Length: 440
Image 1 (tube, rainbow, N blue to C red):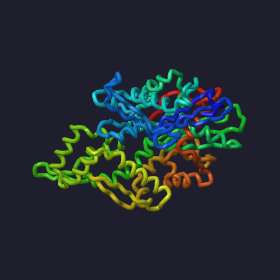
Image 2: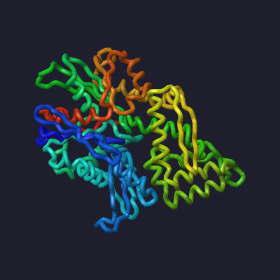
Image 3: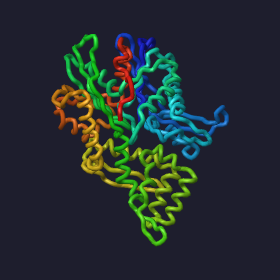
């Protein structure tokens, strides 16, 4: 951290579904991102992941790591680890009580406290002294069919209580809006679209003249639990799961029945897939294999679970998605002893797969405009941020709605934390904070 930031006044924490980012703001408006010396090189992003293993040398009997170090531990010793990613998506889930990790049961807030412990430790050079003002981003809408925002807030409070500071919560797209507003030289109405791993959030802000007592005024927000993870699953569902038995049949006495989709629900992300590697699930799949019309397909499914192939599978899925952001056709390649898949996928195919998601995202933008009492013509600038904002179909959705000259982007993974840290310097910080739970 530069010497000028040794007395940072505020810290912005973007606790993301896929990646987390931390930024520090000084009195003069300077902002620096915390840099992590990760195993694969320095990075300003910290993967929102946890890895656990049994370690009787520690008091709890449970060793753990977070971020890219968690991934490294898991890849080195997959059979002896339990890996969790995207656990933020459980924040508003009433059905989630705890994660079972060997003989331990950890609640969401306990997982979060362990994650923060490692985040701070790996950013020690910059975070050895935490500023008094902590601004934490939160989604406009949490992930899930019926998320409970009050429950999520309670869990967030318990998680961040370990920092021993007053926590100020700000909607994530408002953080990005605040940072973008610093680029503007005249009043404007700004729509920010923040596409994360689990949610897509939208906020509308009125930006005043430079030097105004209150430069930015939030006007309205909306969000939906559809984003990068869902797009990944669309690829998995179309390319991989049919080879693992989805859509197939099994024999039940004298009847031929379709294999229930429930067997494939945990393929929604690779961290949930890792938790399928337990005796009960594997026994159930073995019974299914004996009755399946295509027993080889279920055998491949068992191998994916038993051989811990979820991570490399989703890495291949993510690479395909990224390639299709720049190429009209890209190759999907995955090879292991248990499963080999090679397929060329067109951008048009991918866009067709995610079309239902794009329609719901477009409807949520309409909700954000309605909450601000505005129509599309009254928006002067649209700032797209988050990893999935790089998908051409996402950008085209906004160009068609608002016109391409209004669209801007950049700092896709760090803009939220940057703006949150700047908001932490606001005299009237409470004007930006979330006052109550948003309706779902």
